Image: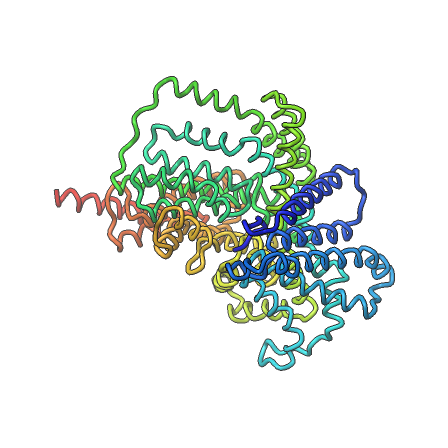
Amino acid sequence: MLTSKPNQSTPVFFTKVVAICAIAIGLFHLLNVAGILLLSTMEIRIVHLAVMMVILFLSQPYLTQNQQDRSSGKAGALISGMLPALFAIAIAVYFLNRWKAIALSGGDTNALDLYVGVALLVMVLEATRRSIGNVLAAITLVFLVYPFVSPYLPGVLHGRGVSANRVANFLTTTNEGVYGIPLGVAATYIIIFSLFGAFLNKFGAGDFFFNLASKVTRGMLAASAKTAVIFSSLLGMISGSAAGNVAVTGSFTIPMMKKEGYEPRQAAAIEAVVSTGGQILPPVMGAAAFIMAEIVGTPYVNVMKAALIPALLFFTSIMFVVHLQAKKNGITRASEVPRKEEESLLKTLWDGIPFLIPFALLIVLMVQGYSPFKACFFSMLVLVVAHAIWNREFGFSLLGKIGEAIQKGAQSTVPISIACAAAGIISGNLAVSGLGIKISSIIISASGGIPIVALVLTMFTAIILGMGLPTTAAYLILATVVAPSLAELGVPLLTAHMFVFFFGCVSTITPPVALASYVAAGIAGADINKVGWTAFGYGITAFVLPFMFFFGPALLLDGTVTDIALAVVSGITGVYLVAGSVVGYINHQLSYPLRAMVFAAGLLLLLQGLVTDLIGIAIFAGVFLGNRSRISARS
């Protein structure tokens, strides 16, 4: 996957312009959230996409990244970098002057609107190819051409076709295409939270989280791996990118785990899984969660509440995995922590107050009903003030850090914004061609209306469509293509989207294309395929949980206090057994038949219900006692 980070061959002038544009668009959004700029939704989206494309094209001014292309020099950079950037600006200026007239006229467009719209679609496709990669660009292109080839397709894919004029105008002059909800979320929630994450990193939150995790786990069995779980989950919560989080945190955690006694593939897999899980951990979940709140039409705090127990069960499962794997590997416990270490933990917390206060404020404001981006904006202000006071840093030094944080935060949003624009093309074509209804009909008819069959079909569809894509792009496709089919079967809308959201997240650790696993394998010096399948096994809970909260809504905090408490207790026991079956160790080595039985017991305990809990406990008790007696007989 490509990023918006300039490469070494990018002309210096382009790099300076990119920095200026990034700071400018960051300030633009901050002033908009603060209420200083009063612009319409459409104007914000048009400006946002234009600047994001300018940053992208100037950051990656070559059509490909091979050496021969880069050696074309300034002429090649001007043609494939500067020219599309200028086109992006010209298109934005045109639509800024035309959108109001089109909206007030009820959608009347002219020939020039069509030509500029086609140019915008081409620009988005090229931007998608450069920022995300060929996979999403190809998927977007397939959906884009579908209305024109549908009259020639057989069976359920057959359609009456739509004119080029209607497709282009629908996708570019309305708020249901390129400038639709996905881009709107990128231009509000995502950009602000990306800036917040950049501020946290710039002011030293990464070091604080690492020190805190190290202090908490010091002296424990598998201390390095448990540090990785805590550290990577906290950092992944604010980074929103599984692969990016692996690249940042993996350089610390993977060598630590290898040194402690984990195999390279195991260390890499642990880091890949926890970095992926950071995107489902409240309060600052990945970018896709904000998009979900907008699509479902529910406050973001409801998404946070629904994800809370599944996220905690997921990370509890990983903690069990690293603990049991350490015991199986024969890793010994570190020496006991001296008394003075407790004081150093308190000092770490004291030094981290500038980070803890903004986090606490963020949660309080969102619970109080503030919009996520408003809450994030105020938390960002408090972070800057707290950092300045705590570290006695003022003047140009502080301003320099603020500028760098705004630049980094805005640039990190570029791939997500481009993916959102591409998703707008996909969702727009699903609407204008009727393909969305057909895909839902295929899943419903193939399932025979049986929910569990529909869920399994949705899972496989989600895994295939999300393969090789960043989480945000994967969820955007899944939300528009497969989530509606579950809703038609009577699944609550939030549950349906949470179901596909989980599979959008775990697509980064799902072989054969697992981006987070690939990055971790590179750091660990391990075989990519082994890391991918090991990560898949370690993260199997994330593939199971969506089915469990479908049948047990208490896991989504939907039910009585008693139901929720029982679901949590049985869920923790269930993920322990699932972790044991994956590792193949619970006090003693487990044979493959016993692992299968323990896995089944774990699933039954995760499934909400007293009867299933009792059956699960009975199965595990039989396995445990039988295995113990066999080991005693051998000895």
